[in-house]
Length: 395
Image (tube, rainbow, N blue to C red):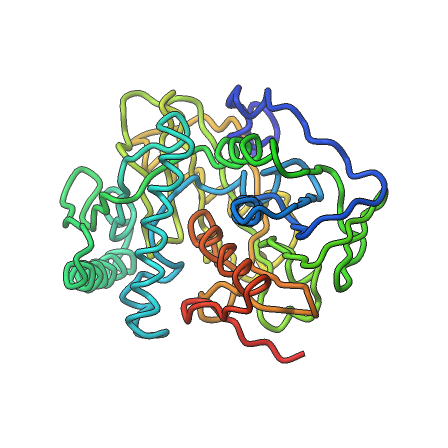
């Protein structure tokens, strides 16, 4: 795999990420009202919600803030669940699917107001039926037609529920434009939230969890005693809390970043081929492209975060289709994320005074914070999560 700078994460080339000050390692015993395990998008949302309630919170992460999936994903802020909303409505019920869609739209507004346009770009997004350009064969043409029909069903559903959506017919093909969506550098988002919340919360990096018991979290050099523990990790949740292994499964998502390409190719994030492939272009002209896991699905059920040759080759070809010509890859990386059987994220009490949220099925940037607040409400108030989340767990 030819690349300029090895497998470093492309988002980390942003000076705001590379220059971020580190948080200390947890050393010694500390106490808090709530301990948060995981400082990605959902974990930091837990921290923010606990602080809003006037409670003391300590957060720990196994690595750097946003070093996991929170800082290695495609940077899409897409409203709704992993399934297209009309499909989720068929699987979970209309009210549950529409509620989640509206809450994730509101989350974009919240992030935009909190972090500003330098972090959150209100671009909208494009769901493309098939890949850009002419279909390579009959099978691709048939799949594109099937997806175009699904786009029409999504369009009709969103219009019926008063959600802004436009049909797209342009240079990349046909599909839908969703004007409420947005884009970001995901690592920059998480680090900015950590900087805001870290003025009141105690945040600790490079403090991997050794054990979680009711009211106590141990790390190699310290421990947190708390009335409530909220585990807010996505990939590897089934390892950290083995009881959840039947409910959530860890998979690998892979990406590349390219050198700047000529022209402004992508005006907004674009996802295609049923959402398996995706790309966005940053303000410097670089493409950030991911996908292909369905092409090698058996290999991608893994907690390994090393890029693999087969998926990387597919993504590089995909990048060329989005760029309209050859690309020069500068970074290759992968991340672990959690999947559930029906696409609903988990919000559940796993052990007494231990609540977990995760299993975002590849769409944790907005679903994660919404699930995080539901986890806080469950843990502190005893309020059952909404039906858009999987919430029943028999110990």
